[in-house]
Length: 136
Image (cartoon, rainbow, N blue to C red):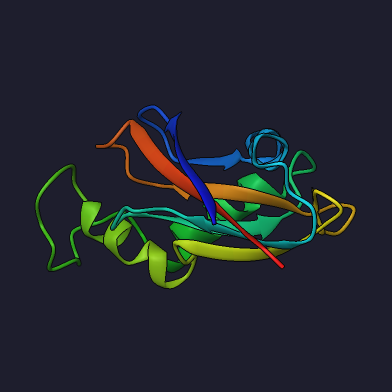
């Protein structure tokens, strides 16, 4: 298995960060053929989504998180900025992992699909993402 971890600077606002370019570079560095790509986010307040980006879906995802999990005082988890407790619930909806088939060295995503880091935690501006390739 070939594996590496990258650092992503997400800043102090909620973001959906497209990892497509990072994945392509990783698979090239791995000399990938056919197999599985596993993406892992080792954080309690971030996750992954496979969605279309650039046409509003990324903003819609963040709006949906805000609607479903408001940043307010209802959360038992109380440290950090107001409403930060909801950030600890986000990974239940956008899990911290994704596994994607790789065919001939390319992630076999659909035409409009991107693998994206979802980070609503404004208290942590830097995230790590681990890519692992398992040849098949």
